[in-house]
Length: 377
Image (cartoon, rainbow, N blue to C red; front, side, top):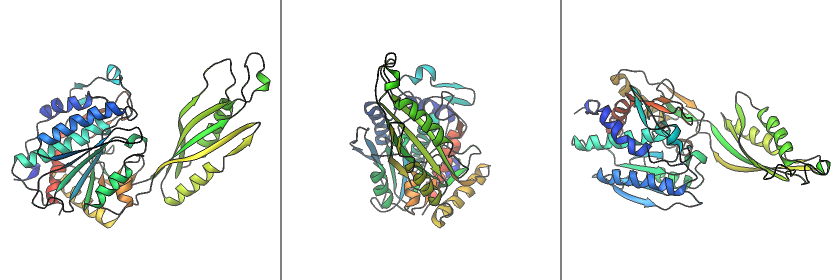
């Protein structure tokens, strides 16, 4: 049987995806992420996998590793790597409930990236139900902390990838439905200003505001953005009393760079901002970094060519390009392991209250994944 003829039913898939989406799993809520991992572990077990729960660390939730039965069980095969954490806090379902409107389905994390993880499992189940044996053994690894740079599971992902010949990452497809064959570097920085406190209403001039100094630094940081290296500040915490001049302010910045050279220059520029001005010190420390995954690696391109042939049979042209955004594919691609990223669902609005997928992409992407699992050798 041709895997492209497998009988995926979009309506049925939507119904069974719903529990995953309605199990909210923001990264910083370890208990919530673990509840999502419970759901995934159960579904993987029902699908026939040997499932392991890997405890979390550093305050994050745990991971799930599932290995499917195969004559070459334990030998290098295909790793499907995905994350189950989302950027949406508990309670987002009140504003962004799971709902279907025609060919569109909404919900927190449905595009990034529970939909892609779900269709990967659907592909494996459909192949097994049809009595089709993949040439290579398949392992699925779901992790809890991708949205904050994968600080607690990078070594787990790399160790698992090193045991396999190929890595598939079902992150959401690009806007044109295309795949990702390389990724820009992503570096994070922790920022801190330290000033001098005073009573804001009685002795304002005696204080040195850490908030005001941080505000100036944010403008300076974001003004360094270029086409090849971007800078943005997305988190800021300071102050407790409005009648107190703030003595400390903390923030987080993110840099995206297209090449290692761009990244090195960007890091140097950030670190050079440190110092003291008008009685307020500014400190910069490095956070987690996703390395540059250089595009056009031979192994990755061979995988892409296979995927492109499959998509032609499905009736569309699969494009492939290097991309920003960052994913765990940065790590496996950087290691030189053939990696095909963004083969997950089509949709729009990821990380927003309009996050949604195209329902038709559920069977489409399940067929693509199933065919890849059958053709990679």
